[in-house]
Structure formats: structure tokens, C-alpha cells
Image 1 (cartoon, helix red, strand yellow):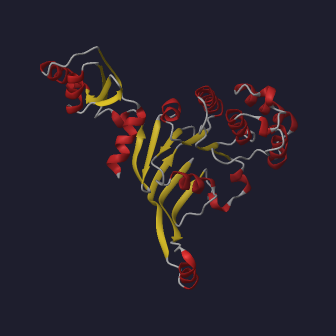
Image 2 (cartoon, one colour; image 1 turned 30 degrees about the vertical axis):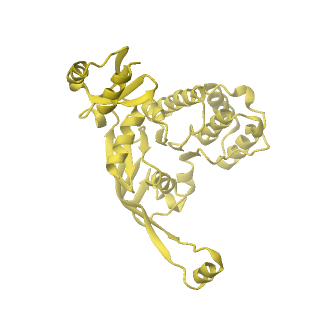
Image 3 (cartoon, rainbow, N blue to C red; image 1 turned 30 degrees about the horizontal axis):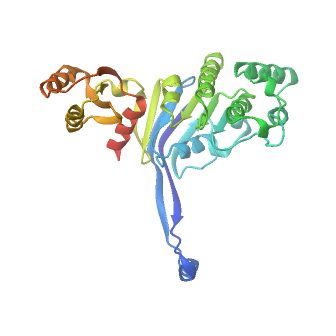
Length: 322
């Protein structure tokens, strides 16, 4: 489906000096800087995969998505999507992709989604019966059929995002690119979109590439994870395998004893609440840690262990890559 070979993308910026003197200086001699957004990327994605694309801000995630969709032309390297060069924007290629940008909308603000859908129907030349069936099926899956004729400006953020997904899938693309599709949504809307995307992938074998700062999106949908840091792919593989070699657990201790709190702080525990302290430890170190705390006369009101949240694991991983 997607083959990227030695992809490089650079862009130019310049520094703007303040004041009239600075403006005049910029006018006659502007100082440009070349920045590397993507640095010799190698990536291959098969049809039907759901791939999570993660990385800190400025890592190059959105740039890579824009290159795959043909919005941006790469500076160097080769990008092939289903046999096409994306930047040429051939009609056959454009019919095969759908894209949702969490902070940009393709819905017309003062009109109901139905009007936007009719416009897309004509753009993609979808037959009447096929169009009606697709709209009905997609809206039913997201439980938004009764909002079909409500103006977009009167819809909630979650409802608008659901219609954005429907709009991107009306022409049944083989590739769906999602950039922060659940940004700002409540838990109920997030879960509804997760289920919907899984259903679309299973029904049509749609390839999905997803970027998100919500780790729950990645956990719910993706088996494969690609991590970008400073324009370089630092990991490409199974989501869960990434953490198996250094698997940690979260040890939580509750105590109201002031002396015990001091000991816990000295041992590297973080105070989450007034009487609750947590620390990430390796699973095979649990017994030794508890033994040390008992020897230090730590009083336990409650003690428990649990999985380290994916957000914390990724944060540690990004910190190491900086």
C-alpha cells in the first residue's frame, strides 16, 4: 500500500527582528534557516494495517501525513502510495484516500452535514443508490442519523468529528489518514470513534494511519507503532513488544504517617495526592522494594500494584530520545 524510501523533507524559516531598524534590516538582508522535518525515512505499510504514528510536537508526524496525502512535496526520496506518486494528485489516487485533520474541518459551518455530503457525492461521482446506502450505514454506525440535517454550528465537537469521519469515508477510500481525530472529545465520543474505525477496517480492509496525543487511541486501535523523533524513525514494530524487555509496574502506597512519607520521598516515590505515593519499578524488584520499606519502618495504610499507563511509558521513551 505505502512504500517510502530515503525520504527527506526540509523547509526554510527566517528570524524576524523587532522594531523599525530590524524591519529594514530584514527587508534588505533576510536571514534564512533550513530545518529538517524528516531525515532519510524508510517505511513500508501493508494494506489493511492500522498504524499508530507517535512522537513529540515537531517530530514530523503531520509533515509525513501531508506527504503521503500529496499536500506537500518531499525534498528528496521516493514515496509510492498504491502505485501512485501522491504529489502528482492524479484523480485515481485522490479517489483512494480520505483524510481527517482534527483542527481543520471540511464541513460547511452554516449548513447541515447533508449539504456537504451531497457536494462530495458530486465531486466523487457516487451513484445515488450507493450514496444513500453508505450515508445510512456510516451514520448508523456512529449513531448520528438523527443529526444529519442539523446545521454544523449547532453540533457538539464530538458530533462534528463523527460527521468529519463520515465525509472522509463516503467514497470508500482504501487509505484513511487521521491526524488527531479525537482531540478535545469526551470519553464517550472517543470510544464511539474507536469502535467505528475498527468496524471500517474489518469491513473494507481499509488501511488507517493515525496520529494522536491520546495514548488510549493508540492502545484501542493499533497493533503496530511508528515513533518519530526529530524527523527520524526511532521505533517501528509491535506496540506491546516495545515495552516487554523493560516491563515495569506501578507501585502505589497510601500512608498518613509523616515519617513514612519522608522515607517514601527519599526512596524516589512521587506524591500524587496528600497520602498517596507512586513509583515505577521492575516487576522482579517488587519483593525487594517492599522489604526495604518494611526495614525502614514505613507504615502502610494501603498498597497496590498496576500497569504503568502507556502515556508514562511513551513520555520516558521520548525523554530518552531527546
